[in-house]
Length: 336
Image (cartoon, rainbow, N blue to C red; front, top):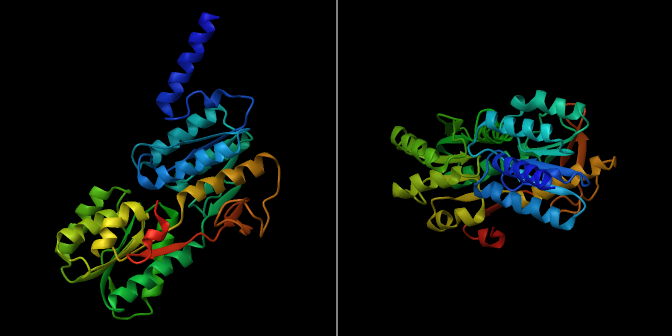
């Protein structure tokens, strides 16, 4: 018995070394395991998503719900984590891809093994049974740019930031922003699609470069959750708060000081907590061989009456209504 106990302990330690917070849970064979894999661990956006995964676990004790992700925004590292989870024999994967194309083959192999696959922020993912989106991505990107154009007085130079050029939703948002800006001939897009890799410090350095290169720039539209923090810091330190417009994806608590100072004009977001819960809810339905149908209530705020369409592959596209835009006057209504 001592030898067996040692083997179990060693196995648990090995899993913990690979997937923080999941030690032992993947060994609970009597319960289905839903493993959420995010783009990057340890940043506010996905820390918030983890609270949703934990809340789903608490409300559904008959399943094991976990979250893991790479320490840096690296598609190859995320791929390795997914491959390891498949090898461990999880029952379902809920993935927020860093780059959907990189994991297509691996997700196909997972489904071929009978593993349920659900994705988020990846409506072009072919090898998924359901991609869950908080809203229509084109509508979101356009809404950000409408707010930016309003702040800029519909004229002047502006630029865009994305987490990576492989990030499907980020490209959709800035592309929709560009389309909206075409309504305003006096808006001039310069040096678009700067890659931030969701690194606030790296974004800060790039924003400073852009401010030096284009001292007359009037606006930034950003995509990754940390981008507004890096760009906002650069604007604030340059003494340009309230003079340059910054609208992008971000969370209220981390953005609070920069919203108050005027360095950030407005943030757009959906609640990652609710997205995590919605992904797990869909994964549970599919594990139980239940249908995901148009108009259904997933039991999660913002996903009470989802739109269900055909996805990029053989799976479904599940769209909620969770978009929020907030500024200095309203962000305190959504503190997290």
